[in-house]
Length: 230
Ligand code: SF4
Ligand code: SF4
Image 1: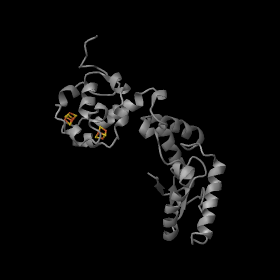
Image 2: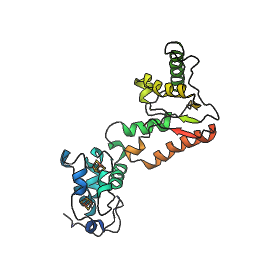
Image 3: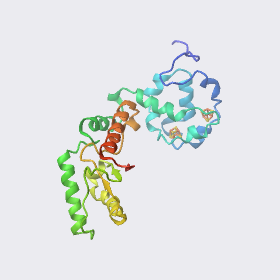
Image 4: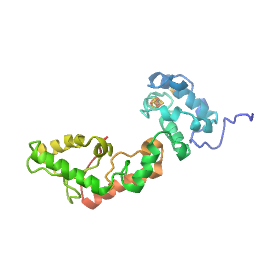
């Protein structure tokens, strides 16, 4: 086995060699971490792995994925060690076909079809019209309709695709507030996904592309305010 090189010039996790000295293993990070002890996870251990150059071992481990990305460790660390950033970078360095769960597939789906679950445009628009009719005729909100691609609206509303997919009535909660407040709002007809799974998969490039789409909507429709569902 090759000796570990602590004072490495480069780290794939962008961990400075000084971390080996900066972190004095006080355990403050571990004390506040909600998942310390699960699957042997301990943020102090993750920091030590990175400081010792065990980048690939950390990237291949479950640690970055069971981390909730809550940031309590980084906030509490008296030495300013960027634990959260390191763990998220470790997610981003995992081979994409080995990213656990559906989050990478969701990112690809969003890039290709405009939302994490691949809901077709026609189905989405049909659902908006159907729910609007219910609001108008059955829910006591006469004249209600969900405005699509309305230029100059105050609020651009993005959507969590799980709602149109499985819990469509949940969209009505916001709509009822808008109706009561006489708010001027709109939802894009395409690329309306408001949950960016690139954040969770550590995929900064895709995340940037998806954020860029929302910025384009804001500019094209001249909306002043953005509503993200989560
Ligand atoms: S809180 Fe900071 S200094 Fe203390 S063990 Fe954790 S990373 Fe190291
Ligand atoms: S960001 Fe991750 S490692 Fe840090 S406290 Fe939260 S769950 Fe624990």
